[in-house]
Amino acid sequence: MKEVEYSEAAVEVLYILNYIDKEDVARIPQSFIKFLTNIANKNYKAKLNYEQPIDGLNLKKQTKELLGFIYITWWADKEEREKYKKIIHKEKSVKKEIKQNYKVNDIFKNRRK
Image 1 (cartoon, one colour):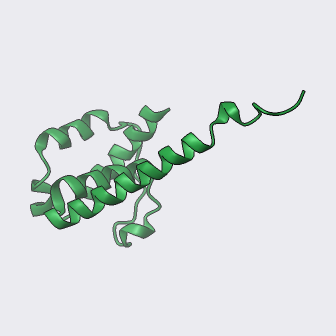
Image 2 (cartoon, helix red, strand yellow):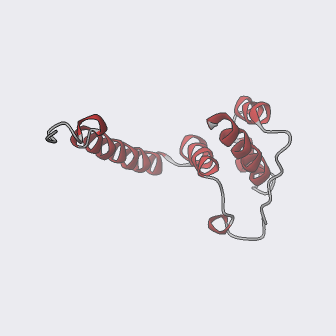
């Protein structure tokens, strides 16, 4: 299931990159563009209106993840990159803490029979 979601997201990302300034797209390594092209679902058509702002495009979660990865890795300056890395690290820490405090297998552990 994840493969399908990311293969469709790759189609959306490639579609979006067609409407982004060529100088910005050139900053993305060709190997990553080729990777997206290789995993892209050949039967999926992106139905995005490029005239809308990006937050109005109703993008898949995986598309947003890939665009975020592109931004942080190749488009953000050093300050922005560090800022986002801190945010990501903080979110991972919170998720880990929640997982430790609320273990699914232990929810009913102390329940009487």
